[in-house]
Length: 225
Picture 1 (cartoon, rainbow, N blue to C red):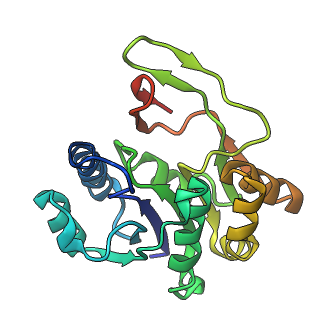
Picture 2: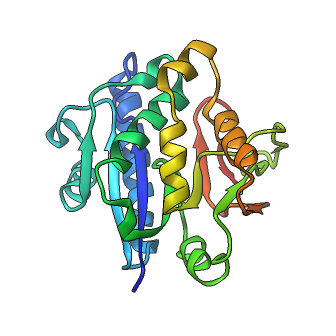
Picture 3: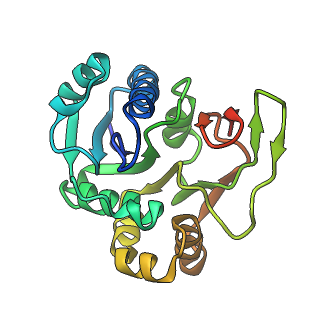
């Protein structure tokens, strides 16, 4: 069976967050990881990375802690995202991907770990329906559940909540990541991702929806993406 890899990225204890905010954050991450572990097929390996903690024992949520003890975890304790959130995620991505032999994998999926994947559908389609593509990207709108508000996406971006590339393409993507460059230019990761895919003219399938749930604490809460 062909092996695939998912790289998951979290920031469990951001600087300046109150203990109550961190408690809620850990609960969100725990819920999302629970769904992911239930949804991901058996031929997928997981690397779960965090850039805000030194060890798993510093996590207060026992359920999340126990889950993390049973998967491959990388703790960077070097939050480049305090300057540019996307740069922080891309920094974790680069370190996690370079820790494995990428030739073992067909697909590599990038996933920011506070989102909920409710089924295996996304993963199943990679192997069954999207074989001929090199990149599976999206730029979906957001449909908020609290007030049914719809936000249309900005143009010339690819979201990096969830995307997939063939492993050799993902290797090139990782080599294109310049953390200091993103920070100095204040360039968001979504634009960098879009430019990388478009400039290299990869064979790309664009999804209109991802079918995941996201919790936006700063505006209208849970929404479909």
